[in-house]
Image (cartoon, rainbow, N blue to C red; front, side, top):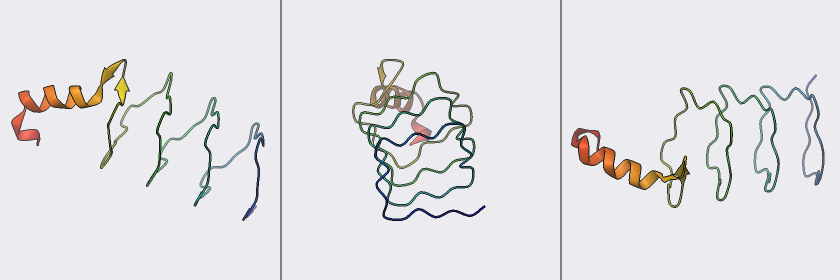
Length: 95
């Protein structure tokens, strides 16, 4: 079933046991949203603002982050910029 929602205000909407596989989201505001038990296998996020976002209890196997800003980003409490600085100092060929 092909469904299209355009120029809609779905503030405070709830989606429970909803299949959105292969859905496309363009110019969408999900600020303050809560995503619990969500399968994003193979999802592509491009031009995304994750400022202040928290990812908890996540399987990041095979995940790639490219062309990103890492200011104040932490992994298990460690600044990513510090992790990259130390790694690059030990692996100069990785630059």
